[in-house]
Amino acid sequence: MPHVTFVTNAGQFPKGSARPSGSVQTALWHDAAINADGYEVAPTILPSEVEFIAIRAQGPGGQNVNKVSCAVHARFDVNASSLPAYVKERLLDMRDSRITRDGVVVLKAQQSRSLEQNKEEALQRLQALVDAAAEVQVVRRPTKPTRGSQRRRLDEKTRSGQVKALRGKVRE
Figure 1 (cartoon, rainbow, N blue to C red):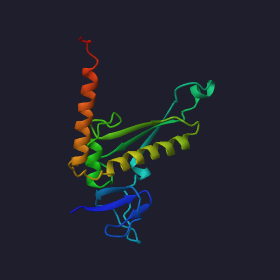
Figure 2: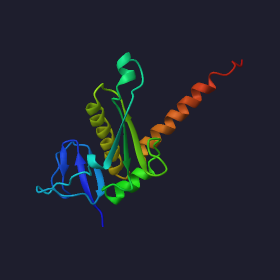
Figure 3: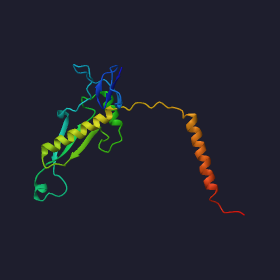
Figure 4: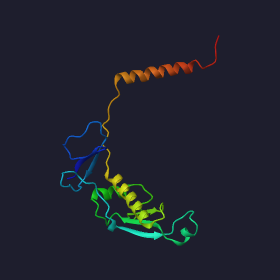
């Protein structure tokens, strides 16, 4: 059975521990690994699971851009990865043009003139995508509007109706 971890902007805290006040909190539902300190670790991408293909970059760059293959296509097979099942399911359910029907995430990185820096950028973007899939927003608990807010809304509607009624033709 999955359990909940609270991740805040002040750090990660195991369920039931004290959290700093004023921190933004997000719940993660998963079966992630727990480190020695008792904190849960978010799922990470292993570089060995990503296939990198060097391609020629687009755009300006003179002769260098025509000769050197420094841009990278990173291909990550979600189904064959070591990610937890809940992350795989959420990744495949995402409506993202970078995810193929076969469940392969394809990213193109060409910001840098260095092949290694482009590989690193592709891995960071892939990790950001996995982190987004692992994060589950806390379910909003519906509340009713207060009597005062309902009264203020109706008063404002009455006032705006009166203003609009005065915009009509003048009758004598």
